[in-house]
Image (tube, rainbow, N blue to C red):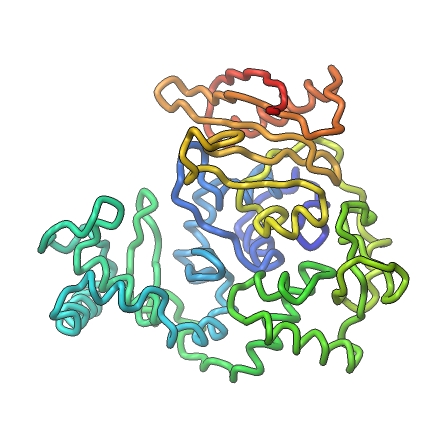
Length: 396
């Protein structure tokens, strides 16, 4: 939890410099378009800084201090990471898919779109007229939108800002003037940076967890890096327990060989000393985003906390166990409950349609009150003027 910035006092002032510091400490903040409640990226930052206001992220983006690109998903990263993302520009996600959306004249379409941005400045997809037929109910992308995405994914364009969550594209050299010309590192340099930076935030991890952190290295590369880092003293070999219990929320790790069956892994040098220096976790309950760094790696979350979490927004309703946009509840160092919220913007009401305690958690009167206080704080992030909270028993 220390590497995920959840042991700090969330009442600290949320200046732009401090918000930028949180993004740098986390490595990145995942973006998400679902707005049944406040969007995930704002929720993630608010969890750590309760005075955070969404316009602050826009301020950082306009200053060129952060940029948007892919990790394992769309994310906001600090500008200094940009050279490492050049390693990805030659491997465009959905490249053929984008070309198909641009049509048979995709080269001419792409060139024309880039020329307009260069000549006219920041543009959105809606600034281009629609042409052609719809391409399907889920992905009705006009050719110009596909071209903008192509140039963004290849690094020629960057997202200058967003308007109602719609991207505003501009030339990367104008959006990120300080870093756009920095060359990409060699592959081995990128792998070393990515693995070391991931381990520093995870504290202790398996090679697959390290590979999943940024989504830019393979498991084989992470495995080889772990072996080399342990051999030259940059990391320590450990065995990782598959249950929660690490002090102050740290991964439950022991020195190699002291447990018979846990997973082999690797940890930062001096991890035991670092754990002892960590502050105690805040005792108040906090509602986490589905994409919070603590829970976004679902397998790691299950290993560390015994919390089996699935995001069910894209699960057909009859097959959902909990709900559309269920939030994990953190109490101290444990994930103890789940809530299913929805913001009713017509009435200004945050409605919590159900709440469930995890198995083994006793829902005392005091804990119900603490959970309801956490919901009230979360309601403020959503701009709610009232709450409507329904209690529920745990599903069978």
